[in-house]
Image (tube, rainbow, N blue to C red):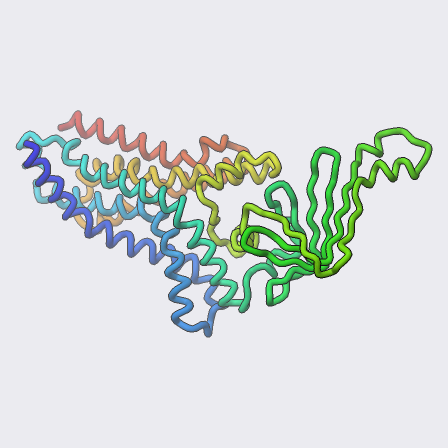
Length: 378
């Protein structure tokens, strides 16, 4: 019996893998095209090789997003053909239940889900950063640091602001602010530059103010001023460096804050840390937590959507056109629920642990109901 089961698994995989690969190529290409087409006006005239590399860097993100859709299509085409050719009937007549026939495809979905989680953790933090860096090099001939000018950038336990960044990526009029209770530390610098593990400032002045001094009654202004100003230190040499260590690189800052609608480049573990960061604002923590839940819910959909696809394929997908149509209906319903759930969670209407999971839970529950109803009819 185990020998027959192994042959059945290989047979089903041979049927499912080609449409799965076809779906991955088709849908990921459409996803990259959709993300790129409105930017074409900015990259006209760019060498084909540079554009090709930029498009290729977007593929890992697209593959993670479209994997559930491709799996649904593969299952609909596979089981739809088996049902139309009465092969499923022959399997059931041979004492092979639907659950056993579906097991190998569920395992395939679990493998794809695991691969998607791995890509979210280790691949996308690199490729999504490279996508943004390549875009600004193509369109502006430099990195995207100039897009961060005049923004208040939250970095670890401080905020960074600078007025401009030239083509050599040197920052001008830099200000770093950090609050520690009532104590405010301000570092101002004439210029600065990002290095591998931090920010180097030149022509800097450090001031620290204890605002609690203003709460103490005093009739002598000089005493209040001495308590207020804790530190006021200026670099004697304008070229003397002051290095501030950061846990985030300049490329990650550009990806996160340069705008342009690019995908977030943070890993799962980084999002989890940012969601708990006490220094960040409530809105920033909620955004990180919501995005983390979405990046967990998307891979799991590779399994839960199959629960819907299997009974639909047996009952309705007797032709390729119907299979394509059903795959679009299922995945569109899932994607809309996922997107609206994420939006409602991010705005606070729904809990963070609920919103991004609505699509996965609803479609998974529907699949269980359909499978149970199919089993009872059989």
